[in-house]
Length: 203
Image 1 (cartoon, helix red, strand yellow):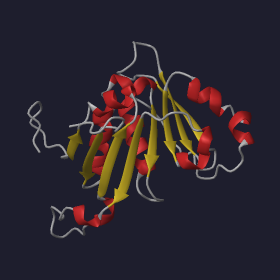
Image 2: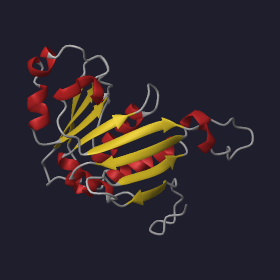
Image 3: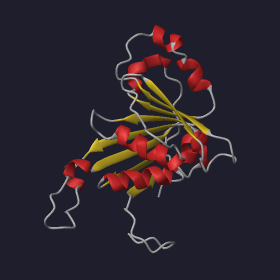
Image 4: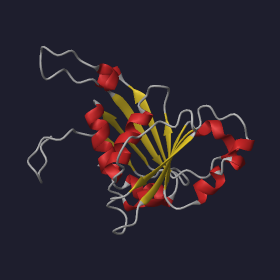
């Protein structure tokens, strides 16, 4: 796709936003990322929403689905610098986006990236201060939220990422091999007013 603003080729994000159906239903966006460039473009698009400054996002998908890759692209789009580590062993990694375009000049955006894959001790929720972190202003990104069970607070947006080899694009260079494992099918559900505002940023 060629951007009408810059004339530069940008990855196409294919998606359809579905309006709310029966009472209580959450709006849903479904789409596809043909490769990691599509993941990055999706992250940059979502990062333009002012609602991101105080939201909780749940990331769902099997091991290797691309949840952490998406988080890294989102953090870069929000202005996080330096190394971005996975919280797989630490459970939570804090970040500060110094130059976040969503924040007033000079005010950083606080971000916490949680990975509850190895969470198995309910006492850790209080001992580690997770309750206070979720209550604090800022963005929370949560992988494997189901492992935290009833401790998890309300989530604003669910992003479900699933590999889909049928979406793989043929290589532009015939001498290059195709990487179908990069293709993803994506489903985004808004569960709160904040989630709906985030959903509005998507094409």
